[in-house]
Image 1 (cartoon, one colour):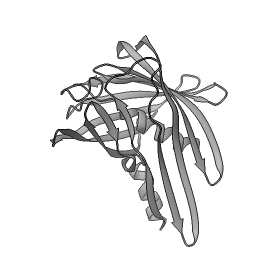
Image 2: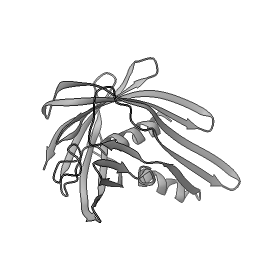
Image 3: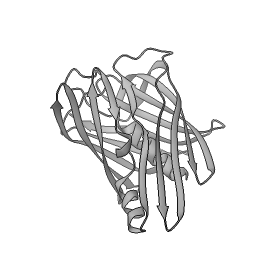
Image 4: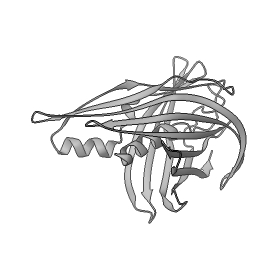
Length: 232
C-alpha cells in the first residue's frame, strides 16, 4: 500500500513542475515541450530511480490553459517501470489537476486485464498564484472503486492539512532556489487498512517543484525527490 501512496504523491507533486511561459501562474504556467527529471532516493539517501515529466501539449481554451503531462518512472538501473499521463488546467491564476488523470495508466490496465470494473471520484488539487506564509490550501482526494465477480475494493487517498509553512533557500543538484515550503498529510485507505504520512514540497517561482520529502507519521523520513535537470 505504501507503493500506491508513493505513486499518487509523486503524481500530485510532479504536477507542479511546470515552467513559466504565460501569465496564468507565476509558479506553474504551462510550457509545451519542457522536460523535468527528478531523482528519487530512499530514507538512507540511496537511489531508487528517476521520474521524467514532459509537457506533451498545451492549448488555450477560452482563456484557460489546458495541458497534458507525460510521466515515466525508471528504476535505479534505468529500466522503465511505468508510464502515465494526466490533465492539468490553469485559469484565473490557479492550477487545477484533474483527479481522474492521477491514477497511473499502467495500474489501470493491470486491473482491467484482471476483469475488474473501475470508478474514480475525487476533488481536484489546486494551487493559487499567490502564496503567503501561514496560508491554508484546500484539501484534495482521489478514490477508486474496484469490483469483480461480487468482490469490491476501495482505494482512497486524502490530502489534508495543506499549509504554506515558510520560505527558504534550498540547494540541490539543479541549483539553488528560493522556495515556498508546503506541508500536507497524505492518508491512504485500502480494504480497511489505513496509512498516514506527511509530505513537504519545495516550490520555486518560474520552476515549480524542486524538492519533495515523504515522512512516516512519527516523523521518520521515507523517501525524497529532487530536481536534477530541466529544459525550457
